[in-house]
Length: 105
Image (cartoon, rainbow, N blue to C red):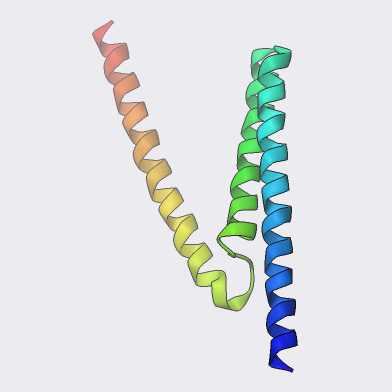
């Protein structure tokens, strides 16, 4: 009985990895096609940005196994908080450097 359950679990996990890999390759291909097609800059940046965010979600869900389930919610909150802190630090640094650049001109 447990052998069948283990095999079923292994197949389900392998299927999850294959789906995640296919989605990651597809999203990467979209970004490359946007650049190769030579789309207008604002549109290209928007499409690449959306593809990048989708790529992050795909990696969280299919490779890091982070979802909205109770057991992984703490991990997701930790990752989101870390992302917030890094964004604030990088954004603040860019803001300060831009302000200094403006004052030096």
